[in-house]
Image 1 (cartoon, rainbow, N blue to C red):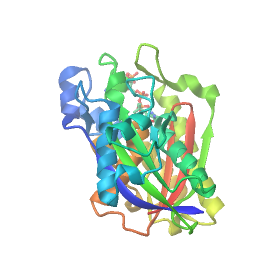
Image 2 (cartoon, rainbow, N blue to C red):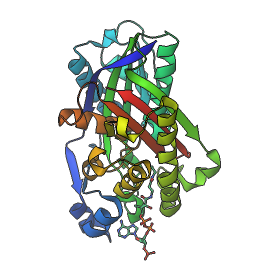
Image 3 (cartoon, protein in one colour):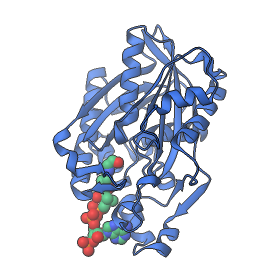
Length: 312
Ligand code: UT7
């Protein structure tokens, strides 16, 4: 049993912060941010707008896109680490907010920036086991909750938003979530983590070194596992943390720049929402077409990393 992608949706909060806005608030420059990260702007949720609110918006748009209602969904898995409430899960809150009536389950995975790959990994296993017919994967983050406006080294890097993908079971194993691999190294926990007073602690250069090796490694592993090379892949949609990481990783894998989907300039790093938002963006722009093969690698706090191969 495999799966197929039947709908997508995304939500970005209205408020946009440009690099120039940061220039007015702290000792930074548009030039530094663009050169070091490729970021030009990011969306920030309103004070009263929650992770669940954004997830609900993306979920409703994915349902509309798939021509389904919430009761057609059997399970919601949300990748997030920034939810305002420790419990219940954003997944079950989304189902409630959308008016689900079939007592469907929802839960969250905390894989940081790799969270959406961890969620896809769960979904692939559930489809393979024949356990659920339709699964919605949501990546939703309010990174602005964790921003320290006195720390320029992290404040400029993140953004808020949510994306959703709906998969349906299929008898073909060549469509939908074809493969996934997830990895972790808790010994490197110190490199990048949230603090108890809700800030982000990151050793940027060390995290960078890990990202440029581990993300391509996961991508390479999954291509080898599927018996394919870069030439067989239509698009690579990497986690959007830094344009330099994206380009270096794609280069190592032998992908020409034209095959890379980049949204880091518009969304900055939205952690567990990043790849899902990028996929939705690429659909909205008509960049990726039905039937194409997408390589989907990610890397983040944990450390966590992994990749998925998706035929859309
Ligand atoms: O989401 C998944 C995990 N996250 C990542 O993968 C992020 C990985 N790391 C990175 O992307 C990069 O390390 C950063 C973008 C975070 C930083 O870039 P960098 O080239 O590694 O810079 P750096 O941290 O080595 O800092 C270089 C200089 C420092 O000044 P000195 O010591 O050379 O005088 C910083 O203080 O840049 C300074 N700096 C800034 N300057 C202007 C740091 N942040 C800023 C800033 N504006 N916002």
